[in-house]
Image (cartoon, rainbow, N blue to C red; front, side, top):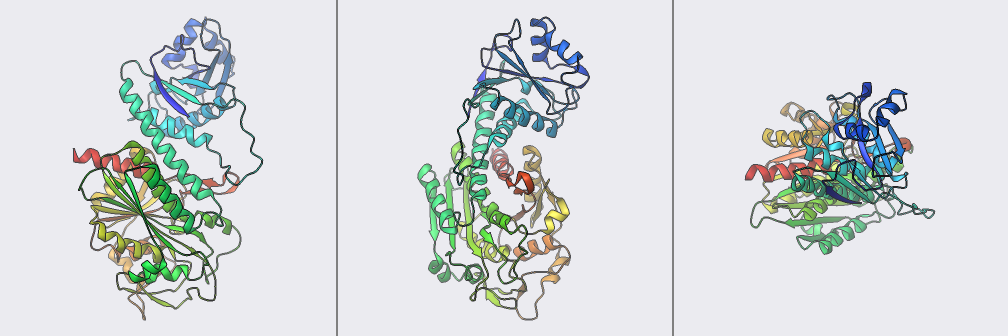
Length: 496
């Protein structure tokens, strides 16, 4: 999809379709009112007879309206005037994208950036339109054989801008880069575990290095990790026939500045190991690498935008499978940090690969470290699929991530990381146990990771509830790429 900025009025625009907003109680947006006036009250008559009520996400396609250059007008409901919420707006954009893509219009012009959305700028509306449009039109096809190309899909979307075209164009470009990163994350996550292996992820990282001169990729194999003492990470891969990989993607955009390090959990399939998961829903454990996928997507987005910042993506990647050589409950392993770990549950493996990756991150002299992981089912119980769980050893960093989540509408919610919870990880036989019992599972998982982050500023994002959807709409969401990119954008702005 291509995105452009135009100064044409809705009446004179010669695209295949113009898109304008209508509200409940029959109220019109400014551009809809112009179209209504030039069409001899045609739009108001349609509303008055009840063809569209203005509820968020409703659409109505009009053809060949007298006095209007474009052959189509798409009316979209945006809820109550001056009370449109972010969710209303996203519902409207999703409906627009699907309606346009099925309409036969290959290009269209949106006038929705003129509507009033509390505390949101026109640039935010444009950027969100691009992100939501790309999400609505994303389709997974890589392992399907019966895909037929659409006859006339939507390929071009323009935005009206009277006097701030540069700002709107930048917003569209930013949205496009974020959306492309989200789609990369979706594609990697949606691939089956027999395709997307640790080796496959390493190959995709190498491809990013080829695509962008600003990205340098390094891959460590199991022998090299063993030399570094990564006994915790390697203990997880012992049960798999797929060798583990430690993937590093180094984006260099700001000279000698200390980098932000993003550590993404890359379990390409998690059967639970000896502590085997229930069979129902186990297919969704291909999504246990969504944390790593979000790091790929973020690196792609910032490289496309050429942001003036240094970012290192670190991805520990493995499978967790049952095998005669797999971890057993009661086993004790030694991490790269030298801490011994009693494995009470082999299905709590994400923290075992992340702890060594976090220790490895110290070598980059990071300004901050953020890990992203589908770490606990407990976070789904606590927060559902709306918010990503956030814990941190630094409140300023936590506040920055909360702000970025609100800015991007890819939101987080902070949970405590108090010392009170650490005692749940006590072990009679090792320095630390890998689980802390039934209570506060998400917090104790973060407490485990915190033992390996004492030398740097760190935050943990538990995305188990937000990284993918189940049921009929099953598929990866691409979150939290918008949050991470917004955090980096804010980080750059704060330094100016």
